[in-house]
Length: 381
Ligand code: UD1
Ligand code: UDP
Image 1: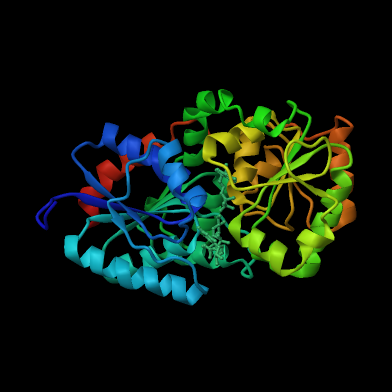
Image 2: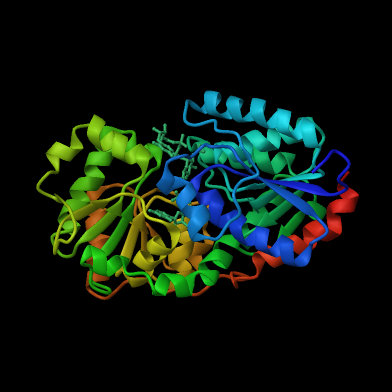
């Protein structure tokens, strides 16, 4: 690779939910736009094997071409480190376009650096809004969208949000959901996974839990309330809980491991909350597919459960993905223990929400995006 390459794209990833969004676009660009070269840049925001490398292996992704190795830190530290390192990389190779994904700090940092160097930005998963600026992701989304030249939306509400914010119509594309592309591609591999057997879980006989939002796990009373509710729920069926590193830290720090020691179990267990490390993508997909229901504060998992038709109780008061509520299987239950217990009981009674698959969640979104990138590249600079 040298400075004279005509069309070069950087795809910037950094945290777990970026990898399953970038993987299908890489394949689509290779197929639909072979004349465009791309470099995969990994900021190193997530770095544990099971938060990063595991996805490259599981999703057959190429190794990152550039690894910035920034690691953890405060928002300012992490964002600033990415900006300083990425600026050098951009200056050395002068890409024609930077593609960013989702709403993590790596997304924000890359969009700001690129824009100031006059490199156009394409945002995959543009326009989502929780209208809650206490969420760091909301700030990241707003800034990234305002700086982007190509905005690829997963749902119609996102398109409306962008219009309302004054983003010119010609920059907005309703392309569907690249996370669903990955889900569709890897369904067979997930079907062959033996994770439920290894954990001693019976099909539709358990629930899955994930938690990592600072508003839930960084506030001791909120985290404890959620666990109290889940302790109650898990008297009826086992709840498998792959624990995010932020959450594992807080469990120890707040003394919750001790306080809930009679509820927390190692696999196999008939009841209780089964703590495990984060699992690779196809194993998590297998867990979702075979579960009776999912409880989560994740963004992406709200979408995956909607596609799979598995009821999802979202432990938040808002969502930036309203189509999962309106069309899909998602229910916002907040963090009040009584409500969580009631909604779980409803599902156990066979009254779980049934939904439909949202528009353009058809496994083809990354092809649409690749075609648009291909046709617009020349006009952008
Ligand atoms: C980040 C994203 C969030 C996304 C989530 C997906 C931001 C602001 N937040 O949150 O939007 O939903 O990723 O998982 O970008 N840690 C490790 N090992 C790792 C990574 C993190 O131990 O590989 C620990 C560190 O103690 C770190 C903490 O987890 O301080 C939080 O990591 P960070 O990337 O800052 O935020 P997440 O909570 O992971
Ligand atoms: N996921 C995974 N292993 C796990 C938990 C989640 O592979 O142990 C996947 C999940 O299937 C989804 C993505 O991680 O594709 C969601 O990422 P996360 O919840 O970390 O972030 P968010 O979507 O909230 O930004």
